[in-house]
Length: 513
Ligand code: KIV
Ligand code: ZN
Image (cartoon, rainbow, N blue to C red; front, top):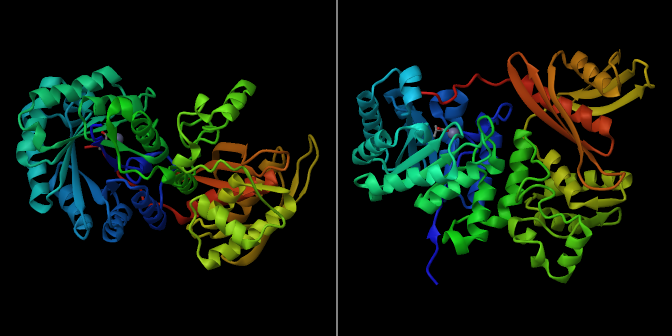
């Protein structure tokens, strides 16, 4: 049997993924994601865009210092200041890569850059040479490559390889390509560019038409050796190619692609949960591989088939992506060891102190809810171990309300550990009343851009998971709260977003050359 071609996985959750509106992460959170990506087995971690803000610089530098076993990459436009700043952030890495980019399509040349083809080639070559003078591993991206005339794309790619680029990435920046077209672009580069074998061809697809994974796979079939992707497919606009989908497609259909990756697939679900929790961007239930329904069989015919032979309706095993098949796990009488065991199986490594705290919260939950499912334990772990410092912590509410009447809400929180309370009679329902009380107490007025409630598991006593997206002074932040009481979950979610707003974020520069 021929050996599978190894495809490098370049994860850009911390750079392109972080460009999703409201997905910004602080240093501690980025570090946690970076370590999870190492455990997942990605080859390259794009940790940020160092010149974008002091915060971005610091996170790339800290991740570069801490990460072992993966290349750490920083993004730079094709100019000296960006490249020097990227290298300053990366230079302590065990293995570093500078990623320089410059747009090449006619529309970007004419309207954004106002540069001729010759000027683009000269700038790209100069950028790659400067990066190579600092770092032996340099990636070049002709931004909007998928809309670039193929002759000019071949010319740019050949010039940057001659200048020392070790990886040439082909982005479909606006998600416009189709699979056959992407295949054609990669094949043309392989056939026409002199010296193409001296560089790894990479692909970076956006999902505006829902084709990012299909386009990336087509590029692999045409000979690309690296795929750029993000956890849960988050990223600019409709997002990027989803890491879990492209990896499992390559693995499940290795008969077709003849390729594999170094990804430890059992870490996919825990990493997906971590990123969803940190960014507040929840995974749709029907999302392939990591969605809650990805392995749920509802139809009687399917269930019958599954009982007779799993492979009748399942092409992957849930345990291979880190989902345990067992559903009903613990209850009121379960002990600490059983809880630790389940948390570990779900991918949470707990310290003794964390386990103690989790156990206390588990007991409170078990008093409210008879059956504790994996989803409940994951939700407890995620809310328990959020690394974000909290200025306001929910304590309790007292509510008086009736249909058609204005509610009265008495809200109690801890403000930096000190009890604080407020009473309001306002709002067009209990949730609105609670939100108004929080705004009054914290002094932060917001526009609520999104509010969603869903059940964590099944049953009438299931925990509610609420996510909100709030806007305040030009900043958008998300928050998440979980409780058996949906009003309490709403208050926690609203406060989590307020805490992020209160921390404030430095305005960032998004990568546009
Ligand atoms: O989508 C894009 O073109 C990018 C580049 C910076 C690689 O993200
Ligand atoms: Zn991108």
